[in-house]
Length: 614
Image (cartoon, rainbow, N blue to C red):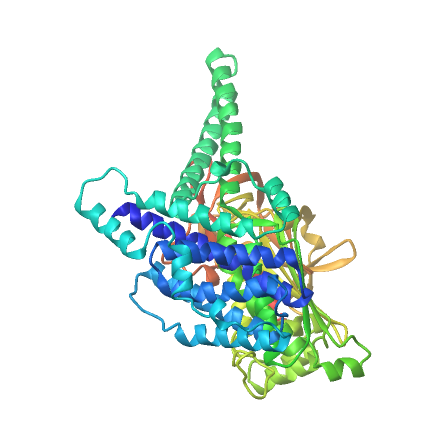
């Protein structure tokens, strides 16, 4: 198979996968709304296009499944059958099968799935639905996916001719095989057939909405974008170095005309670099809807398995986040959803006894707050029983009785993040066998973010995830302690203070300071990092510089010797260093060319305050 054919197939797989990801939540929405012409048309068109393209590329199993599903969508659209749970179950099975078939194509693993049982199940569901609806029940009009479907989609070229074209292309030196034209004409013909079957007002509406020029979109391999991002990071480092050098010349040779020219040039480079960085970061941004699209189906299937009636509401799905967030946020959100469905929401009878609506509710709300993305997952369930959480943790040996008794209610809610913790007496498929919620905290920490919980008995629980808007280049506060420089990410810094040593108090062995009538624990940065002053004397001044860190409702203070100012830094990962235990997020190169560690204040918060033992 030549490179061009590979490219065509790759494009088909990508577009088919995107279509299935887009229409899967539409099926759930359709089931909830009932008859909805616009949704039915949208789904029908997508399935028809997948079938047409697969037929011309000779992927018969995909054709068979897509065609039989399309038949059901056609009958739904024409009002010959009604939407039912049984119909929707089998259609969603077909979506799963199509995804699996596409995955085999993508992985080139040579695995062939037997789609005949599913096709038979689809046909049976359609026949039963027609019988119930009093339809004509002419099986010949809908049941032959291999014959009718193949004839319909191969109007201008057969699969055998397509194969011959591929072979001919590999044997003869041709500048461009005709298969591309054939595939394009097939897609066009399929679309024309669908358009012909639409009502006139729908055609006009779609014509108005259809973009006139689709060439504005370009698919780019993600590795190329990552490479550009790395290069942009290097430019930022060079810019910082040049700013430092130009400031030196400005101070030493301020009267020299060339110094002024240098300052102007570096200033222009500074602006261009900032614009370049912003542009590259925007390329990496993707709507979080890409992750959320699977949750309507997830809630539908899981709520049925635990016999609960649940409504899912999503706000802010258009919010854009860095692609690395998209890659890592899926599992944490899934585990939180499972927790809400299994532990949070009560069964229908229990809800009615409490005077609640029979249908439980899960709300996902995503929004940007400053330099952070906030994701809130709320349910209107029974809330968390903190005393039960403490008791279970003691029973499992995760806490001692004394630690549990000292623990505040807020700290007790975080027990659920302890590895191996579960309140389930009997493990179920949904509860995850006691594994899962610790993954939430771990994955969020990898994104340099944090998660917090607010809960109220019989009212509900909210998980709030906060993650940085960007992960590769960040604003940082440069500090110094015992002659060493460190960078602290700016987003979690609430404020900086200069205090007298007399203002530091000690409560049961813990240094604290009072900030606006609130007690805040104070930690020496040297102690947190395990440093022994590196040959420098400890700061003997009567004053301390304090960096106040705020992560959700948790606040703590870090004492340093000097505050050196704000700087834009590029995070470089450190190989061979356990960043979790060392409280180090990575490293960067400063404007004066030195390597500086970037501190992981989220990890510090987890180690110092997370357990609630301190």
